[in-house]
Amino acid sequence: MHEPMVTEFATTDPEQAHALIAEAYRDNRLRVRGTVENYHFEHKRCDLGDVHFDFMHNTLTTDIVVQPLGRLVLLRVLGGVLEIEDVTGDRRMLPGDVVAGPHPGHGYRTGMHGVRLQVTGIDLPLLTGTDPAQDGGVVERLQYEPVSPEKARRWCRTVDYLTEMFSEPGVENGPLVLGAAGRLLAAVALDTFTGGAAETCPRDSRDALPEVVRRGIAFLEANPDIDLGVADIARACRVSVRALQLAFRRHLDTTPMAYLRRVRLDRVRADLLDADPGAGATVTRIAAKWGFVDGSRFSAYYRETFGEAPSHTLRNR
Image 1 (cartoon, rainbow, N blue to C red):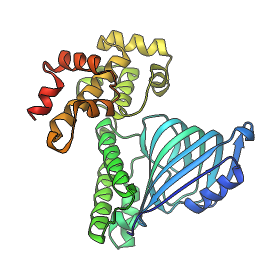
Image 2 (cartoon, rainbow, N blue to C red; image 1 turned 180 degrees about the horizontal axis):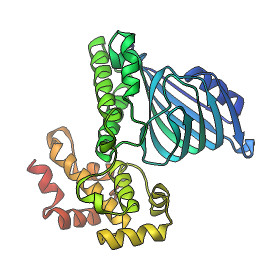
Image 3 (cartoon, helix red, strand yellow; image 1 turned 45 degrees about the vertical axis):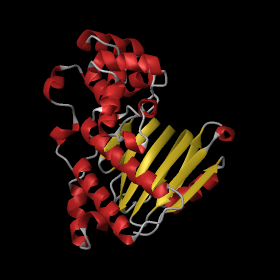
């Protein structure tokens, strides 16, 4: 692990994008479908040596054949559609999915369709210690389907926390901080992406719900921090907007957007309970973090849901 190195790159030239992917990941063959004049590729990286945090945006449909990465790559789809074909099978990921990327030891093909990705790379020795003989054990235990909403939330919070900490300009991080951060990320990655199959879908009372509703719930609970409309939720559930709305109304007696509002209200309440008013935390700032910009409407929703004003929750934490 070393001090953070932050880089940003953007291009409208597919050849330059090919070169960047080769440098940041592995050698590849890249082909863009559509009008090249409309192509835009963006890549940002915070590199810590054994770990890197990336953001990638690719506007057009792009096919890429990539050599084996040799490291664990973990993905959060923020927009668009991502397809991966490798030895684990053919997978299609949609916005909100948090998933292990391609098998570390094999080449793969990926199709990007207007995709925005949060990419976290971890070198295998960080997961296994210094004994390379253990690498295969970790790789064999990886699960390649989207993880449960609970695990997705914890993973996203961990990555967001570390990305923000190491991207802050002018802050020096010593070897103790870097080492602890690497161990934390490795531990959360192992817990998140090597679970059993039973942990990859919602449980308990949700088992009786139709697939479209269960997928909608999982998507909304994993992604309350993304700017979503009902069409985005419908795409994630692979149904029409009308079918989604009818399913939520019939089985939950609510709408998808009302369900999302409740999820965000729960996040606001959790943040208010954790906040320190003496350190400058305010209801307005916390509410805005979760998309509530109309103070009066937010207060009414909050009071109706929790039976008290948000300011009371903050004062009596």
